[in-house]
Image (tube, rainbow, N blue to C red; front, top):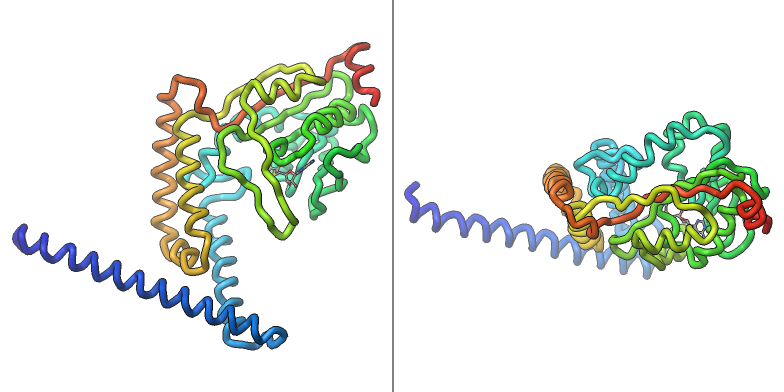
Length: 314
Ligand SMILES: C[S@@+](CC[C@H](N)C(=O)[O-])C[C@H]1O[C@@H](n2cnc3c(N)ncnc32)[C@H](O)[C@@H]1O
């Protein structure tokens, strides 16, 4: 094929494919909406074609999630082709050596599913508190209220990616200080540059209130505890990369038709995430500004001695 014919043929082929893909997606969208309407109007008759199709699609989505988890890994073992790798790689690298070395009793604040439990191999007890009940939650607590935990009873506190969704952050830090033994350690991570995660899900309304710079988190934690280490996480590459990937993913997750598209493009999506993650990782290496971090890791200690003890006697 000479150049001129090639140029003529290529746009036609592309346009045809684009037309076919849009027509299929539009048809899927219309069908999904009609089925949903019929299902709603026939409330109680769960055997309508609409509900069968809905159930089938839901199962496909579930299967897709499982396949994705198998290939890309789950928290805290996300692989470099996972959509969220850039936002967790630095959290993992700072937490892993510290958590595997922890002994004594550990309180996991905002534990959700206790994702870091496999790393707490030497902990005597790993107790989880959260505002929502769940399989892994040992005590349900309420924002702004005293926790059902004895004063001075834990050697360590783990609080990862929680402070941003807590309405009364100073109260949480007061409680951390109260339940720690003098000399006890708190390991805290917070996001600084990340999209709003507020949502209404199966666990209820979830509000994302705050973002913390290295100074902000020191200010709020340092009221009660002695700051030992403050480490900005990532750089311009991971901050930019994860926002781009989240934006594409969340935009495509909006409707069933676009979710089907995402599902069909899984190999391409994994490859794309891997490429963005690699570029992000490289840019992080080159970024010398120190101000484009996406989160902060902080280690703080409860003071030993009269001042620390009296501060904790709430
Ligand atoms: C982003 S998740 C982090 C879960 C887990 N720590 C991790 O690193 O994967 C935030 C968790 O904080 C919990 N949470 C919200 N408000 C809280 C509060 N006031 N006290 C303790 N946990 C809270 C949420 O229910 C949720 O499980």
